[in-house]
Image 1 (cartoon, rainbow, N blue to C red):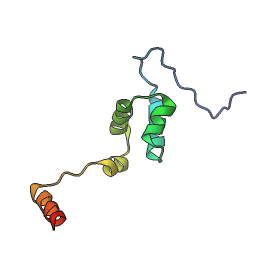
Image 2 (cartoon, one colour; image 1 turned 45 degrees about the vertical axis):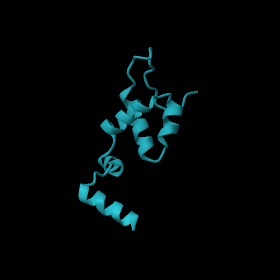
Image 3 (spheres, rainbow, N blue to C red; image 1 turned 60 degrees about the horizontal axis):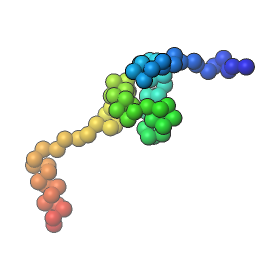
Length: 86
């Protein structure tokens, strides 16, 4: 007997086929809730670039802000280097 709460996603026919949008959103949600990216790629058989693109396109604004890399000005870089040298 199938569990009625279990969702069934469209399977990929070929390697070039697209993933079901509901599955993409489910994976993105799981990663945002703490599932390591490496584990998600292993479980779902994804490529790292696919998951990175999905997180960029479908990730929540809070998640985007959390992973955004900070850019430093030249003055900030020199200040950091000077502090390390001392």
